[in-house]
Structure formats: C-alpha cells, structure tokens
Length: 270
Image (cartoon, rainbow, N blue to C red; front, side, top):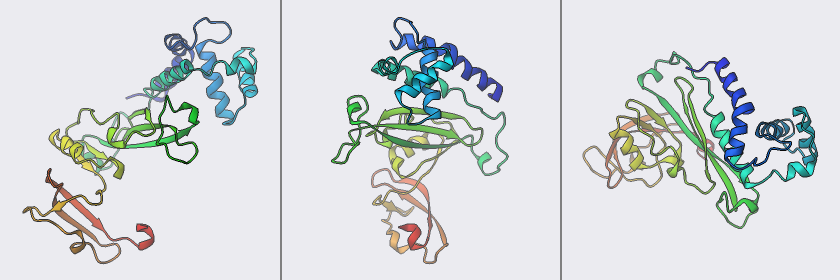
C-alpha cells in the first residue's frame, strides 16, 4: 500500500532532489550555473502546465518562481537530446509514486481473480524533426514521420499502475514493453483488438492467467469437436441477444476459448 502522504513525499523528493542527480547522470546539466536539474524540471513542468503553448519568454518568467533569472535564449539552449533523456528519466521515476489501496475493491466479480489488469496505449504526434529519435508511421500526411507511443497498465482491484513506458510511435501493440512480463496465476488481462495475439493468450493460459479481448476478424474458429465453425450460422438474431459458445480458436493453436456474441444496432456496429 502507498498512501497519499507517502506519494506526496516521494513526489517532492523526485522534483527537488532526485531531479538534480538525474540531470547530471543524463548530461543535461554538466556545469551548474543558474539552472539546477530541479529548477529546469519545474520550470518546464509548471510552465507548460499553466500555459500548454507557453513561449520561451513565459517559461523564463516561470523560472523566476525558482529565483532563477534567465533569458528566453537560455531556456531555448536547454532543449537538447540530453534534456529529453533527463525528462524521460524523471517521468519513469514519477510513475513509481502511485497511490495503491491496501485492500481489494469490494466487487465480487473482480475478486474471482488474483488481479484484473487493463492495458492500452496512446500515440502522440511529434515534429518531423524528431523522426530519428521517435519514429512515427510515415505516410504522406503531415506530422506522421515522428511519434511516441505511451503504454500503460492499470490493475483494477487495488489501483496499481505500470508505465507509461515509451516506444516509437510505429511500435505495434503486439510488441508492448509489457508483453514479456511474468504472468500472475489467476489474473485476468483485458485488452482491445490491437493486442489480439493467440501466442500471448496461450502464454498467459500456460501461466495460469485468463484473457478477455475482442476477436480479430478472419481468425479461424472450430467447434470443440474440431469442425470448422461459420460465425454467420450462429450469430444472435435479435438486438440485445447474447450467445455464449465454447470454441477452439486458431488454425494451428486450437485454443479452447469461450466466445461471447451480442447483436447490436447497425449504427453502433458502424
């Protein structure tokens, strides 16, 4: 368990003391003149928090709150690859300071599992000049050459968070930084269609875990007896009708899975 008071103390330590160490380790601050790591970090974080489109002049004004007198040119000179590594390192440390409940949530359904873990990702487009550092998906449209993807896991029973872990924007969800994490026996993993991977589902099954995900179109389905299953012949006929079928999934894997089908309105399906 981590309390709100503990998280507050941890955040203050990272923002005030640990930031100075990380700035030196990453080469962001080589010779301390006006800016210490904590000064630079808080100038950028609080400056952009107050003004998401803050100018260099506004950031320099924010630095005054730390009793650091700098020009907008001095702030601009801090935007280096080393500064990027510094901010990334701080982000990783900050995400370890999370409030976590001492007891499971009082929901009977969730208590069937040792853990209920949701995983998802979000992509953020970056200026094309950053393509060598964070590769995007490319294409002919603007701002697709560079992007960063943030991967996050959240445990529903106690609120534990993993991440965000950063990868190139073009990274498939199949290659999530969490994909090789040890499977907790009795846990339930919930992901969307982008994570559908029969090999990963089989791996979790061997580790004693469960998976809840959408079915990827075109995936081979079979009856428990091994006969090919045509979904069109078993789809629910009425809106709101639910069907549950035991099936084998995958042409090679033949994983035994419970398939849930529900008929929805056309506009919802679209």
